Image (cartoon, rainbow, N blue to C red):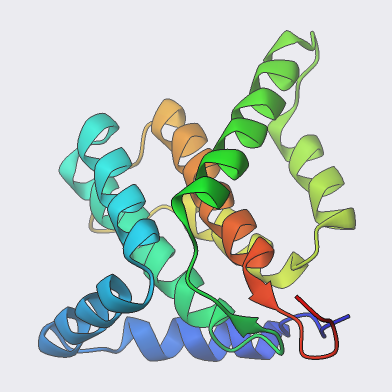
Length: 171
C-alpha cells in the first residue's frame, strides 16, 4: 500500500504552479501532453464541448495541478490509458445518475461521504475546493459546469490512482 499524498504536497504543488510564468506553464502543458496524452486529450475534449472559455481554463488548470500532485505520489504514476479513463468516467456518471435519483441529494454530503473512503483524500479535497472557489476577477462557474467539472476531474484523478504502480506489488 502506498502512502497517501499529504496536504503539504498538495498545497506546495498548487502554490508552485500558481506562481508559474506563462512560458513555464506552456512547458508544463507540453510535458503533460508527452507524459499523460490521454488525460490531456480528455481534459481538452471535455472542456471544448461543454464549458465557457473561463470554465475551460479552470478545468484544464485543476487537471494539470492534479497531475503534478499525483506525479509526486509514493506509487509510480504510469501513463493513464484510454480504457482506464473510460472506465472511471462510466463509474462517475453512474454515481451521478444514482445521486440525481435521490430526493434529498446533497452535493456537500455526498462529497464528504466520498472523502471519508477516497484513496487520495487530500488530492480529492483540492479538486473539490478548486472548482467550488470563486475567483474575484473572473466570472463565476455555473452550477451545472461545476457539477460536470467535478465529474471530469474526479474521473481524471480516479484514472491516475488506478494507474499508480505500487513498488511492493507485482504487476
